[in-house]
Every structure is written in structure tokens, then in C-alpha cells.
Length: 361
Image (tube, rainbow, N blue to C red; front, side, top):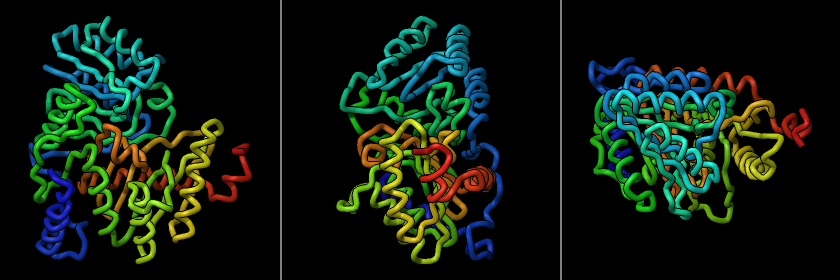
């Protein structure tokens, strides 16, 4: 797949809409056919059961990239499950990023359980992806780190992919990163003509997202965990996204975002404040998550499509880190994301409350 894959994607969807006689893509079948690529939204507390199910049912191999692995109640279940898989003859590989100091010890703990685990050992490369593949036919990609906070308390979103080309493409991407995380190469292009589920990684994430936002006709809902506003560099990845959001709002699209605010990540708060102010000045409706919870998801609901990824809206996320994600227009995960986002929106607060109330400062 090349960065131009979206031209084919939108053309196929527009043709499908015309063939079924409706003005939007909402008339597409709810479910893929038997054996066709599928996607299921997995958010918040649903992540751990989904992960444990994938590992428990793996028969040949489990492949993992994770930014971090911290010891804790939830992660101990993950480590146990991976070790149990090794015990029944499954090959398990886990790649962790080397910039997290505790990851070397975490890798050794996995090695002690028979897992083929390592850190990437490239200080200039950040493996920020959160992905697990089982038997080359099922994958879990999204925002959830392997920490008890991320698994058990945060607001996180992932897509569970099954069947066919998207998972096979992600496995090929994993093989490249496992061999050398510093070499930013992608597998051969996926056939995206009419595809309902498309795997994404690295330099494909931004073009896919921009294409969807630029084509939006009704709504764009998104979460903002971390960013870096560069108003004097409009060509930077974050500003390309923010510019597209502002343009969408200007042409009458309803654009809503929920930003993270915490009582301990003060630098992150300041960066998010700058982005929120910039967006609000251009017609984007922004709210703040309550201080009691971390909204770490990187989720985008755009008309009748969803893009879920590990990458933040930043240059690092879109150009430097090793990141993964997926796009889908299947109605069930899109509807599930709509419900999830609406709940976040209902629980969030406007800027005035965010800045003055709840002990946020």
C-alpha cells in the first residue's frame, strides 16, 4: 500500500453508495462475508479479555510489539498467559522499546518464562506500537500499553482484526521491525480496492487520516492525548491534521474533540491547551476529560469510518516512531466507537471548567 491508497478507497466506497441507491456510504452491509477481513472495537476494560482470548487460542505463534511492560496485577495476567502459551508449544516473540528503563528487566522476566523477548536497542527509534498477532489471522492494534493503569483504568481504544490480508500485512510489518526497528520500511502494498478493513503503520497513518478528514461530510469525532502545536510550521504532521479539522469545521462538518488533562502531566496539559485553543478559534468544539481518568486513546470517528492507532497527533507519532493502526468502514465497530465517544463527550467538561475547577491547576 502506498500513501495514495485512499484514492482507491474512497472511489470504491462512493461507487458502492451509488450502486445501492443511497447518498452516503451508510447503506453498506453490516457484516463482512464469511472469511472476509473483520474488525471489532475493543475499548477500556474489554482489552484484557480480548488479549487473553487471543493468546489462549493461539496454536502456532504470538507476535507482540509494545512500548512498555510494567509489573502489576493486570500485566501479570498477560505475562502468565504468554508463558502458558510457550508451555503448550506456541512460539512467542515480544519486542519492547528500549527507552523505558524497566523494559530490560521486563524482557528478562519474559525470557524466564520461555518467551523470545528483547528491547529494540536503537536509542533513536521509538517502538511506540501496541500490537499483538496470533497465528497470523488475528490481531489487536491500538492504544493500550502493557501497564495496569492502561489496561484497567484508562480510556483506551483498539481494533481486533481477523481474517486475511490486513493481519498478514501486519505480520510482515512485525517481521521487519523485529529484524531491525531502525529501518523504516513497509511490506508490499495491500490491495485496498473496496477493502472494508485496512491495516496501517508508520508513514501510512497520516495520509489515511487526512484523506478521511478531508472527505468528511457530516462529522469528525476524535480524542487527543498528546500533541505538539507548531503554528509556524503548517506542513508538520500535527498541523496538517489540525488544518484538516479546521477546514472540515469551516465547511459545516460537526467536529468534536475530547482532550486529556491530568493532575500530574503538566507539560502535556500545556501542549494540549495550546492545541485546543487553536482548534476552538477555528470552529472545532473541544472539551476536556475529567482529571480522574486518563484518556489515552487515539481514536477518530469520521462519518461512517473509524481509524484507531497507537500514534499521537505529533511529528514523532506520524514520522519517527514505529506505530500501527487500522481503518474500517464496517458498521459494527463504527457504531461501537460512536457510542464510546458519545460517553466520553457526555463525561467531559468545557474549557472554562477544565481550567478553573476540580483542582486541575
